[in-house]
Amino acid sequence: MKLPKNAFKQALAEGRQQIGLWNTVPGPVVAELLAGAGFDWVVIDTEHSVTDLPDTIGMMQAMVGYPVSPVVRLADNDTVLIKRVLDLGAQTLLIPYVQTADEAKRAVDAMRYPPRGVRGMGGMTRATRYGTVQDYVAQAEQELCLLVQVETAATLRQIEAIAAVDGVDGLFIGPSDLSATMGYPGQMDHPVVVAAIEDALRRIAATGKAAGILALDPDFARSCMGWGSRVTGVGVDLVTLARAVRALRAAFPQT
Image (cartoon, rainbow, N blue to C red; front, side, top):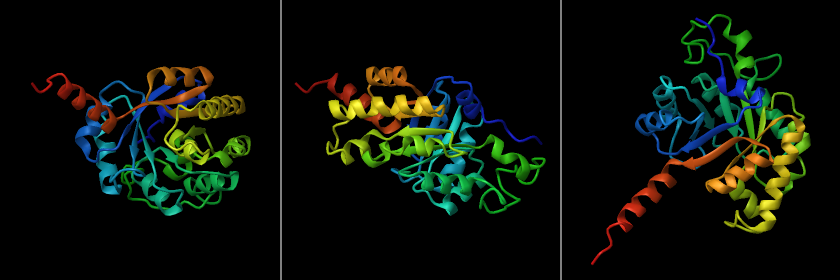
């Protein structure tokens, strides 16, 4: 069996816009529904949700039959977590709160087998299709994609250094944490924060690495695309559900 191609990584290399959304509800049902909605990618979020490793494998399996790329966001830049998620068959990872080039290099090393990195060897894994992928160890790295999150004011000064790390495919702005560390918690639309985001996206794009962001306001998302975002998250499952049910309830006001 041949190693599956990473369509998401290929699209980024070709400079194509990739639109996606967040999956925070654990389990295969919502994951499959989102996979069939026509987005390019879906983040399986294990940082700010109750989703854990057993959930993650089932959610990836639910997406297999659809032309969508699962992206797994880990809870931390942790070598063991990275190893375990890669063994589950994840090919694209989103690592939160990466603040320096050294931290980015640590994530890269965790994704690569020795001698180029420190990823532990495991043969009977979903990633190897349980031992049936030919030369998996030699080929795996070429189909792995790493996005690191820029989430603090201090990290804004490290963008070029992080982007220069070999093995980092993209830098993804986390607007909520960024706004908080800039002194405007919860104010992602504050002019100072917006200006910082615009500058960051432009600088990331100028490095040649993929720039990304989660932007739930459609107009702001389009602005971010204009500033250079190529990995643009435009929705979160629970946010979309909450808005829809509240709107439905409002359509039937009490008399």
